[in-house]
Length: 338
Image (cartoon, rainbow, N blue to C red; front, side, top):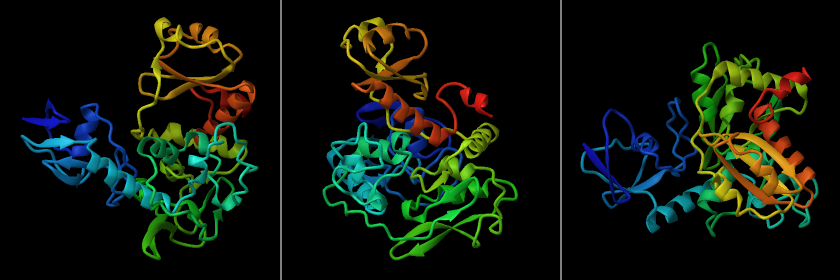
């Protein structure tokens, strides 16, 4: 059986959704509520495609012989951007489009934006940011206004409802954990956001597995600052072994001598990626070209950015990575801290 994807014939077999089929075919499609291995009934409407000339959600439709799928038509891109704009209107996004976002310490703002309206400390590794860069922001997207929900905290992590995008991943992953019974969705105005079942996590049935922190795309469920929380989420990541979310393709180059020859001899930061697109190294150097030559054979791909204060930029990127993953990229250096 065959399906046409963007004008090319591709064979398919098995029971799957169009979204899963496109993943297997190597065609990236943005998604927010969908997460590998989780059953989720939410509708973020971001995985929209054109099937036989009609707009459909790829996560809801099953492939059929002779089907024609287009993922990048003008109508698809417009509908996708509008759907994502509705999500962003309920999540801080001013920093995502700021012309000074690179190198910003996220503490002071040149434009005087209130801190409640700025992006969170996961800015450098944020899934919402990656999707924004890939999809873009529709002109009709409303300005975010912090609703002022109370933040729920414990000694390891916290939940900030003001950042919730309603993807329901926390609910879905919690249902997959034995004895866990924490999350539900509640109506707030004309939308749904996550909520815990009691006043605190323990009374809600939390087993403190860390799964909800690992799947949250928006920084709404996040670890506290400090070594204890970083060590806890690292152990959780290793124990749970959750599948990795499919993220927008990294704008990177194959790590070859030919590609490095085109890199100017400037100061900046380079990032190395393995074959799965995961970051394995972040490093600032005074001469990017020479530093990258020495890395040939250590990774599959690389990206880079110019930065005169390359050490500060390196520290910023590493800090963002560690806050998200509780470890250094590509190795277990965090073990030395505990």
